[in-house]
Structure formats: structure tokens, C-alpha cells
Image (cartoon, rainbow, N blue to C red):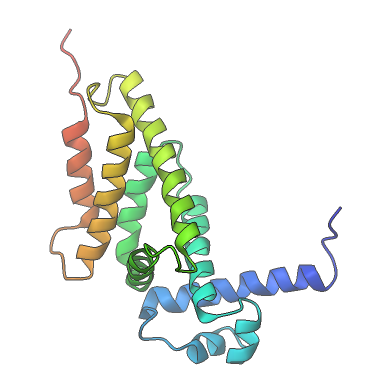
Length: 194
């Protein structure tokens, strides 16, 4: 049985506190424009003290992405993963620095040697499965086109979401959330006339 007291619990709590501070700074300023020294200062630590909790700058940024996903799940608690993804896409307009970090790291992590490769493999697998289940549920309810392959649609929804995040960094004039909603409208089965 693990104790919730002592140095380990304090370390876990301090790490969570650091992640909240780092998330806020990166969300506002981006990770390329912010040094680890500035991140540490925002968290009230030295650079070495902050990296002690994560091991390296790269592992810190991976932890930030994990924390972002956890915060999004808590903030946007919805039963339908497709709706959840739509809400996150809209929210991402308010955190351009995190979008920049995510876009950069997801591209770099395509290399199996990248420290965050397994994180993205697992993240995409879980997200694809949840979205495919949501497609199936909508198909069963008669609100989504029945001819669509749920796994293919799930992969395409992720591709659209990631692509919109990348495009949003280049002054995309249309709201990414509106574009995603338009795609969902195209996949929605119109109600049958009785």
C-alpha cells in the first residue's frame, strides 16, 4: 500500500504544481519563446531544481502534453468523444503556445527514437478507439452516415483536428471549430421524414 504522506507525496504534489505553472506560461508564450529558466522562475525554482522533477527539458515538455490532455478531459467532460474533440479544437484557439508545442512534438515524435514516440502512439491509439466507438454510437442512433467505416472516420477526425491545429499557426481566418463542425455536419444523417 502506498502512503499518501512523506517525501514521495510531496514530490508528486510539487511536480503537479510545476506542471500547472509551466502549462500556463507555455499556453501564453509558446515553448520556443520561453526558456527553461523562465519556466523554472514561473514555478519558483531554479532551472536545475525544475529539471530534477522531470529529468530533461524534453521529458518536461512531454509531461506538459500529458497534463494538457488530462486537463482537457477534466475541463470538457462529455460522453461523446467526437463532441469532446470539437470542444478541445475550439479551446485550442485560447492556448496557441500549447498548440505549437503539440504540433512540433507530434511531428518530431514520428521518429521511433524520439523520447515522446510511445506517448503519441498510445495517445493516438486511445483517441482513435474512443472516436470509433462514438461513430458507432451515432450510427446506431441513426445520426451519423451508416456507410462510414468507424475506424477510418476516427483516423480522419484526428487528421483534421491535427491539421487544423497546424493551420491555426498560420493565421487561419476561419475558426477551426467551425470547420470541424462543418465536417461533422457532412457526416450527419439528416432526420428521416415520417
